[in-house]
Length: 171
Ligand SMILES: [Zn+2]
Image (cartoon, rainbow, N blue to C red; front, top):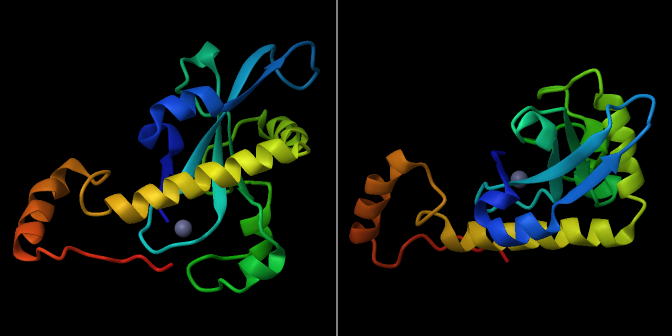
């Protein structure tokens, strides 16, 4: 489940619609801006309906990760039915701090901040819409763009061999 920044495929929409929060005089967080960068799964054929959020700050050049949050908007039953590659349904749903990725001493305060953002149904709808845009681009562009540079030539060869190309739409 390789997670890829939404901003990478949709730079304009991403710049316009990535949530950020300005914190001031909060005990557990330094003052300033916090951006909630969205990452979505770019595995063809997958339908995991979740987002990974990296919390980044302009103060640290948008490069240091302040927290990594996982969140899925579907029911526990939906994630429970996944099994296999995806683990615990409660973790799939979240929001939770991703134990396999970067965290800082501010992570739990940032998770609380994200929980506040999720109180807005507009924000949840936006995440779902971004997920759908991203997934559509994965299914359309798989094997053409968005792949590693090193795979380009190989893909080109495959394309020449198979004029039908790989059609893997599962819905
Ligand atoms: Zn996935």
